[in-house]
Amino acid sequence: MSEAALPTPRTFRMPHTLVIVGALVAIVLAMSWVIPSGSYERVERAGRQITVPGTYHEVAKVRLGPQWLMIAPIKGFLDGALIIAFLLLIGGSFNVIQETGVVHFTIKRLTAALRSRPFLEKLLIPVMMIIFSLGGSIFGMGEETIPFILIFVPLALSLGYDSIVGTAIPFLGAAAGFAAAFFNPFTVGIAQGLSGLPLYSGLGYRVVSWFIGTGVMIAWVMVYAARVKKNPQSSPVYELDRARDLSAYAVEDEAEPWTARRALVLILFLASMATLIWGILEKQWFIEEIGALFLAMGLLMGFVAGQNGSEIAKNFVAGAKDMVGVTLIIACGRALLIIAREGAVLDTVLYWGSRSISGLPAIVAAQVMFFIQGIINFFIHSGTAQAALTMPIMTPLADLVGITRQTMVYAFQLCEFINPILPTSAVTMGVLGMAKIPWETWARWFFPLMIALVVLSLLLLIPPVLVHWGPF
Image 1: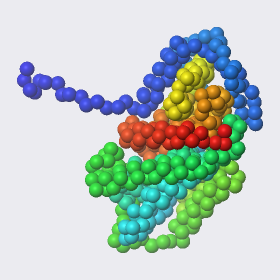
Image 2: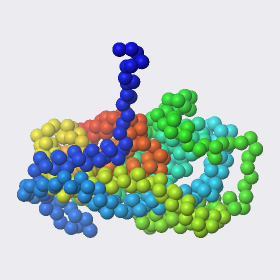
Image 3: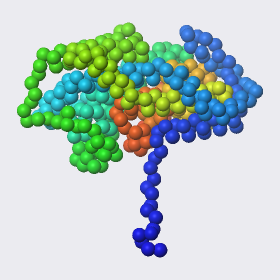
Image 4: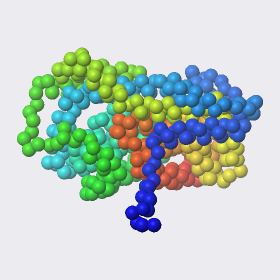
């Protein structure tokens, strides 16, 4: 056979994220056919369904038909309607804002200022990641990071980094604080309350672990950012970033002047950001209020910038359309939980996991608790919901194997370190959708960091076991 006749070898390419998540739906459905159905009893406490320990029992096998491959994603849309609506609103509103040109203009001016002061540019990544980490640790910043992606990605690109750096600054900053939190009411607060611990007890060691976890995340991003700046072709998103329209962020020798309209739009934007922080901290705003704020901000800034009603509508629809792929992935991600719940296998997985801990040495038992929480986290991404499901089971189990309840809660919160890689997480997929980074590309980049964070978590669990971390 001549060389010309030889077949051209095909390089392997990861499937589309929707194909990956769809395959996971099929796998979970198949697993639901072989895993016994079971259930814990639950009681309502403070508006939450709390699992009752010691009440697990097998029930008649629930066999979901193959039609659930189609039904579950539809139910996933309904189950995730709030976050899906939020993403569509954010996508539409920010496109209206971007079309005003003020964000581009401000980033160009900021880039010029940072480039003339290299020391400040080097501080950008650690300082901003620390701020976002404090947000994750103190008030559970999660979904709130999504709008910031549209600010930090172009800023990172204009400074010679890539879109991964721009995504990592707010997203991984907040993720580090969320996992190694010392005050997060949605993980630490709820879990301690359900475990009978004094609220926010054990603060000292949590603060230490926050410094370590945040420091590791910052160091990883800074080393990567320096490598990309030195050799842009080393970036896994190099071609994707080259396809972006970066001309809007180019810094000219002759700086464009500020105008009254630009200044007013920027003031409105900064006022909206201040309102966002105030609403979260003082009024406990969640997705509905935050989405309404950004919708109002987009409309108002569009009018102030000179867009008429039709132009605002057109820009809004274009921005929302960019988020449709992400919403489909989120719906399929929710479908995994729906199948596990409808097939009555999620409680069985929790029961089997809890039984596997009995008889293990205390250090190993704490680390196995971390992995069990990680498995549950694959299906349930709400810290509050996961705590309500697992804490009542893990609390008496911790007492039985000689692990303090404080350590058990700590194992639960550390599993949040794996969230940034999960395609079933609405926050992760919302962030990547805003950044226009394919999940499979992000996953390849984040995987080594995730392994490092898992090892860090296992090591951080050793001292609490050795010193019998209190109060009890």
